[in-house]
Image (cartoon, rainbow, N blue to C red; front, top):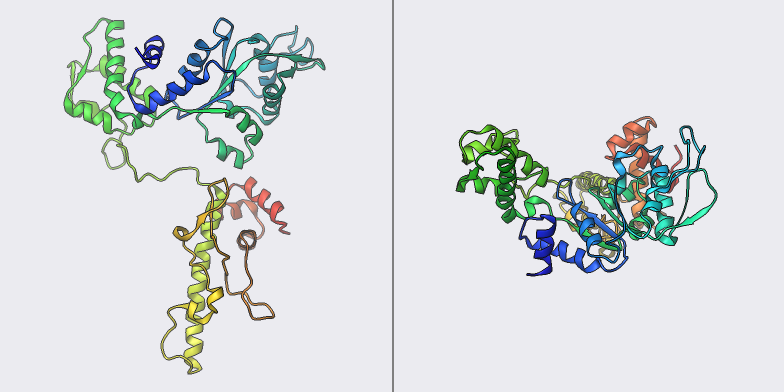
Length: 414
């Protein structure tokens, strides 16, 4: 029996997907170390099992394991919960109290939904990870703790960093070893197995025959998008087990329990879905590029009319490149003709872009940088909206906070 099979049996993990096995293999390999682990994945995929596996197969397995849901603790008390407080440090602090990091000394602490931590608490957490030191709320005494941190989140942390909601240094400190838990739709071969397990559990609990799937229902399960992942699948299995009289489930019966699209068909996996969360900087760049294309088309039309009226050219000009020196031919401003720039994944033109054919004293087009284009687009939006940032931000597909940051970065005077 392989170690992964043993882990699955011990923790009740069901599935034979290669992606699932890979995630479990990484968890087993990192368990004997004290490295910090960051577990990512969508809500409902079962991320909470992995810190338990890591703790159970580590040298800390005989010490405490504490799981903390960071999203469930109010911002005003999160520091006290994690690091403890002294008597009288705030209203209601009638006695001194140890925090989770102090309680878990020698063991493992699991920080679920770590992206929900406030920025001041993130700074405290970073200090614990770097030095093992923390200070109770209301105290000036530095204390030490020896704790292994495993964190999890369903948030896109790079995007949270770009929007200023998560510290970049904390991200790299937490993500020493990253583990990605696959979504249910990425392991379709495991879906019938999970459904059978959930239906069997309901049957045993309520002393009823277990429901089974026919082939059409089994295929529909595999094709469904499962936005809620394993949690949604369990909910569907329990509903069908409790409500349906027939113990054989067909595709028609199953479809009644699956949320439907506007067209009336159950939501199936669709590779053409647009990814959410495109960064505001990319949106702004695309808007600049499309505006440039419109400007260039207008310029071609104007030049063609001027040339014809002067008798210098009989036909409309179809290519503006012919009017410019070959060394300064403008880059075609389309999104698919740009190359990757920087770690953020935002794409920018590989060559200088000459926009709006701006001319200086030597009659040569002036090279525009990315910052120039962004500045010009923001200034235009502010002018069109009479300086109202909220309306300008909406026009530029970005938040008002991001717009304010861009105004400061680019030195725009309103």
